[in-house]
Image (tube, rainbow, N blue to C red; front, side):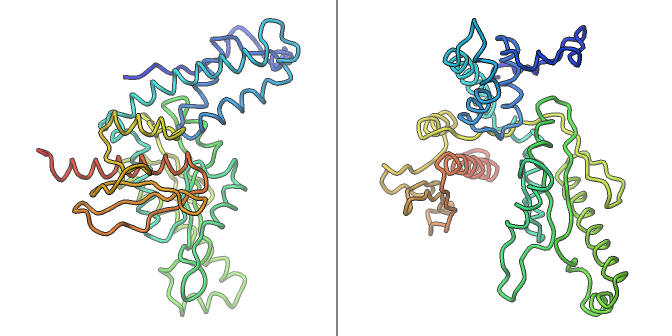
Length: 331
């Protein structure tokens, strides 16, 4: 097990609404530990972003702080973040713990929805408006015109923040970009003749999208609460949440791979069959893999940001390792 994470709680004897000045006070060690833990627990914040965000948040307060300088504050934040980060990595090395996490189930549900014409996203955008804009941008053009995706399902950063305090409720947004593919052309063409008909199409499409999302989450083994109406989001009960943290750099990626026995081909390696690989690709980074018998390499994915590429690399290697273990339990 890794280091215990603790979420700071406001002192019950202090009515902070009466003391606005408290917002300008640099946090002490205990509160700083809680702040770092809160930002890390959902599993989406990059290490450097965590440090930079706290620096920016308390920049003004540090200008008048007598006991803590900006340099010592950053050093303390970095030390705490590294300790917590290391503890979380130890927890992630437990394949059974990862599999038991509801993050694993949410990912499985979103993967199923992606195959069913949905744009899906975890921690997508800061709020509802930015998440929806990103979901629209995430659609892929269809060869015959239009887009391959007709609906969406996601949760944004503000939703993900709730995962720092378990048990939690994760709220999933859903909807339809266009008419549901289950509606036949004749019905759609007739409905499009009137405003009332168009509104009915939109309502039915959104209803079907919500039902598909609820069904996928339930099929993945999650506890779902939804009243079936398009005016409410789908609530998912979260008891355990262990999302692998973003990978920092090559050194950390090597450490994770060595600790977990992941079979990875690095840029400096020679040919390595049956492996996951990463390599520079025209100012980008490409992550791809062979099949289990050393066959042709997959097309893979390209990333402009190295930590994103490394995170995808480790996730892919873990998935392959899990599949191999499941198919060959005595191997």
